[in-house]
Image (cartoon, rainbow, N blue to C red; front, side, top):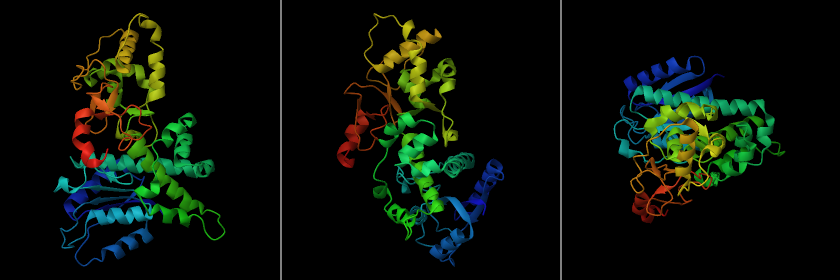
Length: 365
């Protein structure tokens, strides 16, 4: 069967617009299937029928599905159904954005709804990301035999040396999605010989979410363009001056369409090549200041300091707060480390101090 994306919305006009935008992006890469829940529907039965009749690889659903009279039927139910079955699912809310939690869980994808263009770009990129992972697994049986999703991810990305860092992003997956226990059990039939198709689907599901919602979200072994500016302690408005030096460090793996990403170890290699251009007697109070000095010396340019770090006037930097999306430095009045909400492997991520002090007592950070 053809790989299928299921789009669920109770507003036919919006659904039609999103479908049209996706068709223009995906062409023949996927079949698009739409469902407008109606009062006469028995939602769970209809959903099961759609799954049985199609090879659904991604589901996208509105939060409120009551427009057509199906009271009490919400996208959260669809998210639960998908998570129970190990199907990637994205949700959104056009009418009341506050009805969605600000932060999705590890196995939930949050679709932007600023415009149909933005939503379609995101859905297409996510679909291609999961598809690329599944194709890699199908092409290389050794990925199925790796000791952990982190090990399989490192091998797939050609970065075996980063397995330990990727593993620090891992959590108890069963705790994030208890239904995974059932999915794992299904890969071990009576003779304990794993069903390859089910195992490949399950590994794709876990690896895809680990990469998209953890590794790529919290700067560590891979950083965004936003995090690169923080790492260099410079204003991102100067990107045109320094980005060409890092062209060879671009990440091009699954989900690369979602943002500009860079391999941290390769960024460090570029910076290290400029070490001999920095006067030996210069002293730097932070890694960010040293990184800025190296790139300025290597490119013979003067870069603007980050304007978002107010504590040190942008002179130190080096880290990014993944929640406020601002540059921070190691000063205790600027940032704090916490492995509760930021994975241990995200070594370039720190909480902005003010944000942490406000929310830590409430959220147990």
